[in-house]
Image 1: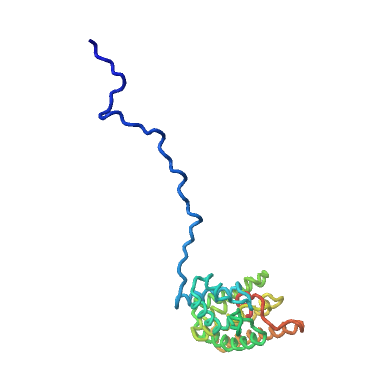
Image 2: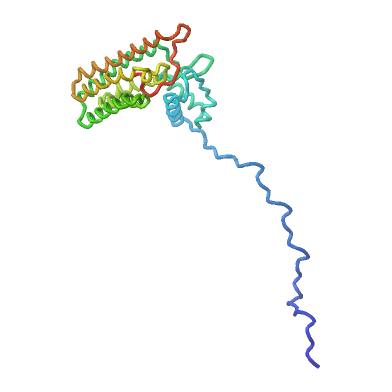
Length: 277
């Protein structure tokens, strides 16, 4: 008898494996997504001395750079959140800036960016006169050939900016000249005091360096300072610096005369660099 034909494929041991009765069960729905976007990581607020230093630096830069207007309220909770420091650090920073004359605290109203009156601006400039004269004299005693070259180059750039009518550039160069004289002088105490005084005058409505005719007038004064320092004549350098600051005071007072009687005598507008000079 011939071999029987298999009725079907050979059975696997133990019987044919059972196929699933239907397709594999898919999950009943998509994986659960978070109910909302993940919260951004927030670094803990900086506290103590590091927080105070950070707040002082950032706020000082904002005030001097014109990002905060005179009279603007300084809300502690808002600023602390913006700067990522604790309120205690922010409060300590405001006290430091008050000591620098950049902030004032109003009883029962909190702190605000300080508003400088014209009389205060004149008084501050009188103090600058003495300190700038000292620094100019010291610079004439200490100036090196390299530093003298930098001063002469600045003088040439000042002349070009006035000739080209680039008043904003002139104001920036003006600021750099005064800074360089302080640096050359090596008079660290006077330089520190001048930084604080200049900070109080950095914003005011007169913008002397942008007034018609003012750059031309102050240019000759700046060139006289440069000449006396580079030629190492301390007495003449001091005299030139004092003469320059006296002309600043005269320009401030002249501006006051032109103001209407109804205008408050406040220095409230932005000021570019060291434009008082």
